[in-house]
Length: 146
Image 1 (cartoon, rainbow, N blue to C red):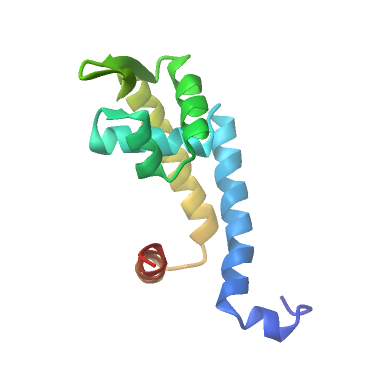
Image 2 (tube, helix red, strand yellow; image 1 turned 135 degrees about the vertical axis):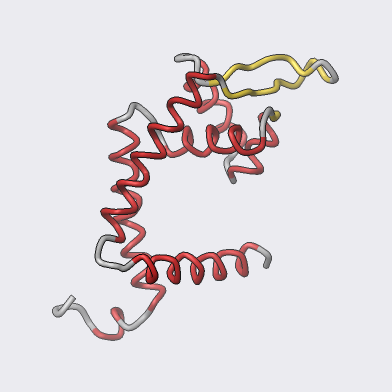
């Protein structure tokens, strides 16, 4: 960073933006190596944590556009990572559930994402990592509520 203007490198917003490029690239490459995408991970994680859900609920929980949810669920259903069944209370709606194969894929993606965290945050101590996560969470939560 020695050749970059200080008025850039002194700004946390600029640093976060630059670091996010690396974080996105590392995660995208790790997911691609597993035949997955970030949307797949979001959906599998939401189903694992919250259980069976409608496509609309998944979209809200994962902060995804409705059409992206449908496409990603189609991609996850093909190898059997999720099952889509009609909602008995509303036949126009589908309920999505995580399969055993989907749990296995989620575990693989978790390991891959753990490696990404290590690559991205390698220079930081465990304590610094916890502080960074706490501060980023505080900022994210604040701006999400606005």
